[in-house]
Length: 83
Image (cartoon, rainbow, N blue to C red; front, side):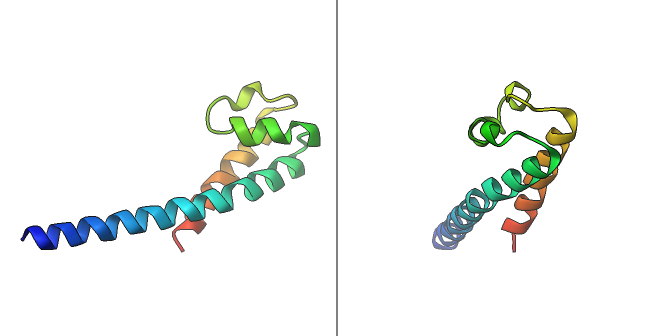
């Protein structure tokens, strides 16, 4: 029984690592494209990439349209990471 649980734990850990890796790779390009299309100034991209998870409203040039586009891009990247 313990061997089975340990195997399941290892499978879950591997799956989690793969999912995290894919999400980390997919999210920055997705939010960059969405933000630029929505009108975020290019010079605000570094702030966007470092702050999108914590304080998106503090990014210079951010507005509700850009914020909605970024949130949608994050959701699409998350969904894509499961494939």
